[in-house]
Amino acid sequence: LDVKSAFLHGYLEEQVFIDQPPGYVKIGNENKVYKLKKSLYGLKQALQAWYSRIESYFIKTGLTKCPYEHSLFVKSREKGKLLIACLYGDDLMFIGNCTVMFDEFKKSMMNEFEMTDLGMMHYFLSIEIVQSESENFLSQKKYVG
Image (cartoon, rainbow, N blue to C red; front, side, top):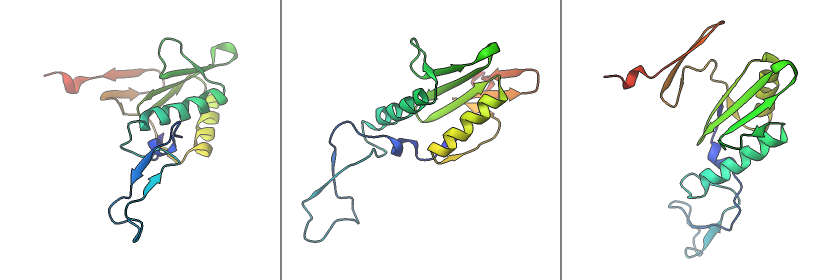
């Protein structure tokens, strides 16, 4: 799953003002600035605003943040059923051992954010992933000379 324009979903915790972008300068108000209501790509706060937004959403939907790795969230149910969400910037990875939990979470995410379903994962952070019914294989063979 890929959240479209992820950094634009973040809410700013402080007031941020920007100059009028070229091509959008209002005649007669050339010296005025815009106050942002939400995050924009390129802002120093963009990553933190996105993380705060997705973190609050994950917690609202029942995931628990790992106390040792703040980009890892886990949801568990009876009989060892598990869903894990991992963040790296605006890249997201969801894994689990329960199809029902995965489908529920995927549907919930798609209702909350505009997303593209990329299907089975093949790469994540330059790690190649090969999946089958019985096993998963991770490789970084592109780094081997």
